Image: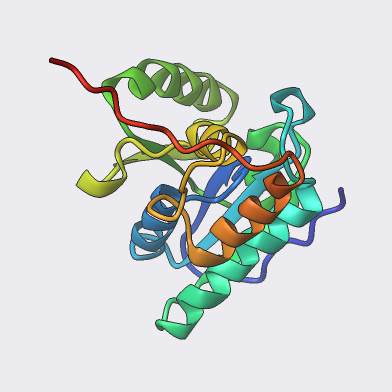
Length: 186
């Protein structure tokens, strides 16, 4: 995928991910990251190894829809681009000086710190900044959202209304699911 380098002044940050689908946790990190850089690029990774539900093109469009909603709230320093290269090559091509990563729990930290160290070894001019998930988004993951949607559960508390409808429609083809009855104990 050929990338166009955004024309920006100041500090460019890059928030990479597969965003399959974009969740309220991602949106929270995006909003907060947009406040600490002059321009934020949301890099939507083409990572077939993760078995994405949506194509890269579709995920870019979904993320762009959410970014357009943020622009209505006055957040206008965000752009969305796909990438299929090494993250540090993409960051360098963009002129990014900051990689933004979200941390939900301590279990994320070990993986993220290893990745940050490897990225630093490849390019010490690009810093990794960690933003911790806010209280209401710490448990949200795209993997869990997909699983809940696949099994007919309600994902509205975890994604925007547009994403919830799209996912419901995507999984509707698999047929109705039985309602879960709470276990009764004596």
